[in-house]
Picture 1 (cartoon, rainbow, N blue to C red):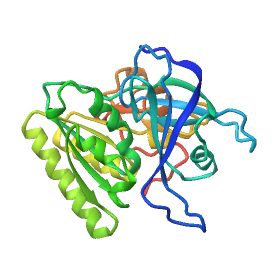
Picture 2: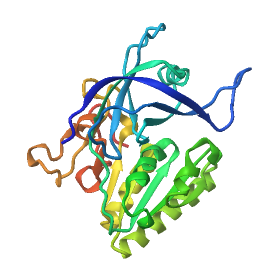
Picture 3: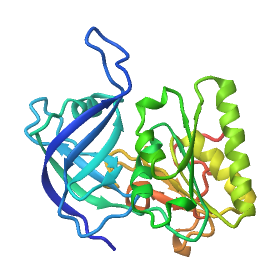
Picture 4: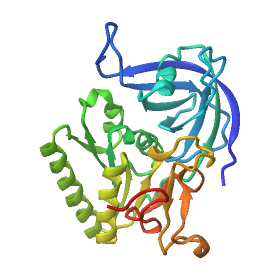
Length: 283
């Protein structure tokens, strides 16, 4: 078990991806935030950190959970999308600014060098697979299928394509999205036939379809539910998911668990994404 560490780090770069989309000066949707490397003994792809800017003049003191994109010998890289005031504040960090980081946190993706591994990502769900490809001892065994609504230059695809085989698919229209899901199904069938496994990260509607297919095929599959996380500490109870009868602890089988404290990466067979969460209505 990796023990998390609280540390103060310096921002070394904050690079926007793609093209500005709104406003007189232009607003970017995606950023790669680079920090000096924390003094971690180790980390694992799929884990996340909590990050809070220091000396925040706007009073936004809440730390935010961010998936670890990659870790190099000199830096920690975080890839995120601007969705609200908190991430907008992060997008305005500049070189020399200081941040508080707590991590690495959470569960991680399985890594089996001799097993053909299918990586499925949609949108910002591509982030943890950059680091996964970096540290995998046999990248030739990896294949990524990536669905994205915006042009591919909004995402860190170039560096990843240099490390492993990947296919990008636009899914902006209903027709494109359905074609993407068709290819997802076909790829999962192919990896089942070849004794492989599947890892997936992205928005919940996408993950639910991957989960359904994984359960149908009995394909070993892990899902990162990091999109559900808010406080990252288990306090807000906003990121719960329901465990299945296969949950490792029988006492917790069929009950809610928090993604941030029990995940964010789960085996598909251990959770039930069809279950109705407390407070939700079945349809």
